[in-house]
Image (tube, rainbow over the protein chains, first blue to last red):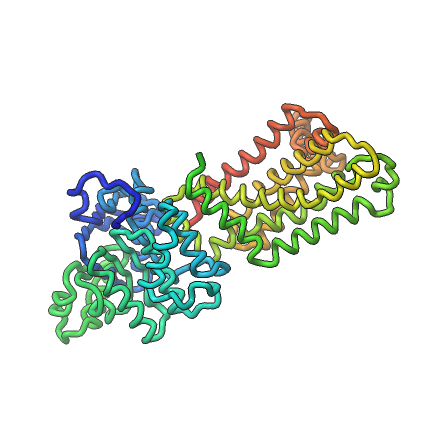
Length: 258
Length: 248
């Protein structure tokens, strides 16, 4: 039941689910993202790495249509985020940084609200919400107020809202940030399960995450891409064989250039 | 035809008034305050007027609204931006315009609910005499329009800041100036630096003036246009503002 209600005209639009072309964003005189281009194919899990302030979140916010790029374009399932924003958004599930949620609602009510907000068919609402509660392992808290939940549960509720319309593309901004090791493991398990059928972009500054879930890594620093390849290729570049070291070398090199 | 996004957000926003004490506190203070002021044994009170009308009641509406309506509107956007849920909301296929309108109408419906709960007033005057129902109806209609204008001002200031208290204070101050725009102290102050035609424009902007003229039982096109323009202008400004600052 991929993308339940929305029309997807041509099949060939789907091969490259995300294309980003010279995307830039400036805030006043500070440019956060500079001419970033990449493509993500179907079924890939892309890890967007970089130090804090590298432009990862800004890139993701542009992809999800939350902020407007200064220049450049991006398409999601063939739909431009500039000209067909709502269609592009219909194909994305998004977990923003820190996973903000409406705290005064209970979990089921919140998911039903998101379902309606997405304009999906109301006859299937009950079933779909039930499915999602099960998929994200949050059935036992479905009637609890969101503000009373632990961080780990909140993160899974946020994942659930991103999955409610069964999107082809998932964009997760630091989905495991601030969680304890057990909660991290739980969230990663859910992501790993999803990676079989979805195209996922995860931003993180935790390098172990790349090894754990990603099959491709892009390192960003100062708004530019400075590495694009598989985690194995990244490791191979490191003299010590550690991701940490090569990450530091690459980002510091970029810093020196700036 | 209303979009599903509008309906979903409208419903959620309306219900949210009853998820916190805000909705109940508003209803209790509004109903008790208005009832007390209309019947208090001072000048111009219901008993001294000795007529079967709601004049004493409607006279106090602007002064109740000036504190209570900004309390309803202050959280509309400030809260979303502070908690970051605005990012969640606008990653959904919903436009800023639809979101602003859905929130505005939800808040307006809430005030309508509060006003409708004053129905015992109507029953009281119906028992005591034969009131002019047309005037009562227009009194309620003009109260709704006044609330709509104040809510749209409040929505704008709520979109401007992440801080609900700042949004509340700015809304009260703006609504106060708008209410009093045709009163001698305000006009005298403006008159010290502005030419006569600015003074006339200022006078015609008064919320109170348009509210009262409609409450007297006369429907004037100029009053209807005034309230529509007020609501339209402030709502449009909210949309422009949110498009600019939603990500900050």
